[in-house]
Length: 76
Image (cartoon, rainbow, N blue to C red; front, side, top):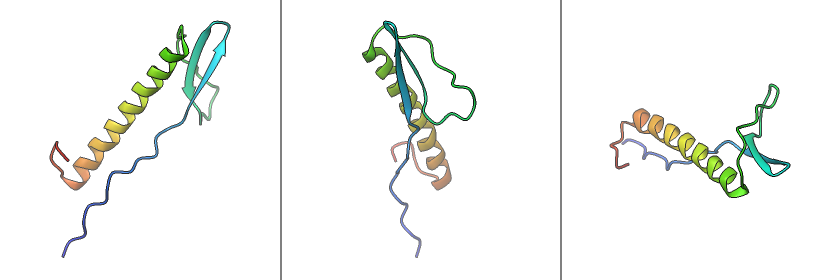
């Protein structure tokens, strides 16, 4: 009997937001080389939305790899 497929569980990358003057910048928290900050965002909400988009992209990439590994359909 085959084992059931485990539920999707992904530990996503952490992000750092800094404020310099009136602008906000983001970058991955765990960064081995010199920190590469993003373009500037006019508000904290804009910076948070950018982080949310990055996390969504990372989750979708990992989910796609998981689907291919377990040969799941698009709905899974």
